[in-house]
Image (cartoon, rainbow, N blue to C red; front, side):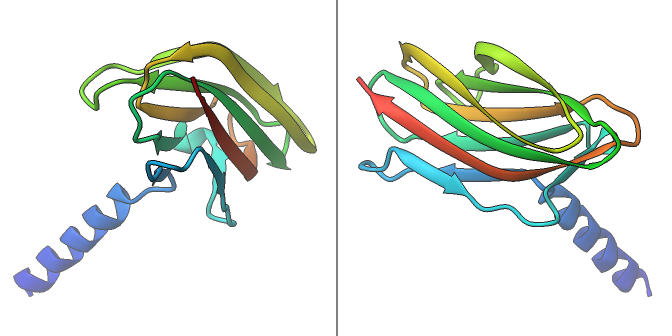
Length: 148
């Protein structure tokens, strides 16, 4: 019985560590990625933060464009969405450009563009929900790196 409880605990721990967040690593020639989302990619205040991490796997400065399509599921959800970068996995995340504050009752698309070339290797698109008991679903995210 103890083994069964221990196994269930480990399973629950593993499943919780694989939360909704997404990640991708580019090959050396890749500069664009279109993420796929499903019903599990719903953000509420309970989730607090949702992130998409991108390792562009290159050693040149780059500019970035991010296309985001988000839709409200219930109420009028609000969240701050930002593009962040860092060089090493041990560095703190640095916000690139201005965060977008979104509040909506329908399907909304917008872009975050960074025209100043940076030497970051790791990027993150961070969704920070800040409305109580409201839900939003990520419909589509596209990331493009422009190597300098």
